[in-house]
Picture (cartoon, rainbow, N blue to C red):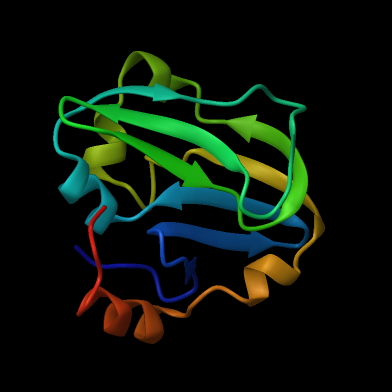
Length: 130
């Protein structure tokens, strides 16, 4: 699976893109592969405030619950509501149709500190899937 060049990546396997002050957040193919069969996505409420490192949502699989962390300070502007009923886009297209949420960032410095694609792929060489 091809990872987007324009995204930034976290050590905990979230990806993010920034368009102005709106950050789109998702999880990488690596995270999805290591979670296993996804059964439920617990998305946040639109209007919720988050800070860097806050748990933004949870992804439940048959073998684990994975937490997704916010990289920026901001307010949830939109969520991918269809994932609550059918999480399959998260597996089939984690960098496209499987996006999780859009955050209107009040501070984007957390985005700037995320890894670019080359650094993330190097990180994967020694990454712990947990």
